[in-house]
View 1 (cartoon, one colour):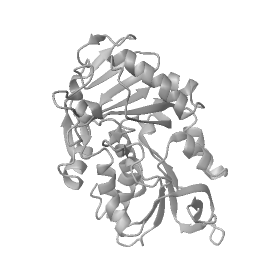
View 2 (cartoon, helix red, strand yellow; view 1 turned 90 degrees about the vertical axis):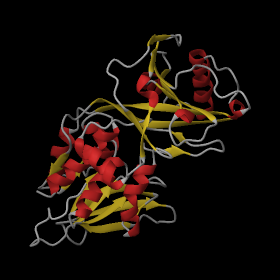
View 3 (tube, one colour; view 1 turned 90 degrees about the horizontal axis):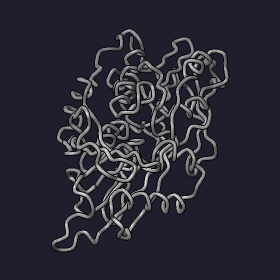
View 4 (spheres, helix red, strand yellow; view 1 turned 60 degrees about the vertical axis):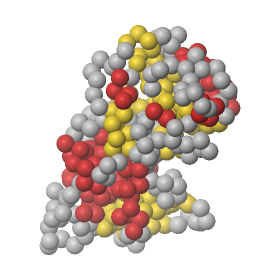
Length: 358
């Protein structure tokens, strides 16, 4: 993400707002910052990372969103090597099983095996590392939700953001030369101002479709007893055709993780959409039943937590890396531009920054 000297010396730095501190937003913000631009990032969550989230429990962490990442793009590989050396660890889930509706193995490995990587000690480690320079500059506002984007009240050639955070009374952040949205497609549509100059972006995004995902996290500390190392199947990860469950992973099998037996269960997009309005207790009961059917593990977990990602997987992508509208000084990026992989998010954020710097 080294973009030094991309900004012409004759032009003063622009003040750019980036909304969202997931991988796309961080890749974009860091690239612009390295090129000499003045960047301020707003993140609704308490931590940077978006779906590269790690949920803590008394028994160890869970990768609640992205379970792993691939490294196909040379720029992503270089960024990891330079900015997060040693954090990317290969996970043996490249031999992930494919299961039928009843939990029986129908395929011993994915059709096209490739290295699966995780960040250590949790998937949020890379995002936290990439956020450090922004935090040091005081340019990353965590726990700050952007509610609206409007033309600057004092300078119609710039933008202002209306935000809401803990202890804030609807503050306004003004004077931005450009605003870049690095959030899920649905959120981006809602945030785009209803002005003619923003309509090209809204129109281009019309065909993007995503589905939600309910994620259930389970801890079985009883498996740490002497002589009992794992429960259930001998595989560590599987894709499933079960009508409720699409993916299962033994979190404790990932490198750099705590040894206590922990599983993450991710529901299918169809089931998650049908149960999007359900409460955590009901979802936990249904997914726990499906988990037992698939794995044969019928022990009662000591700890559970269910989490809903409202825009988890892209079913119809934008089809290009990002959108940048120079006349409006507005742009959007995110994994949904290209797909739903972690490196799709990285490439999208990087490409948006590079387009701005042309």
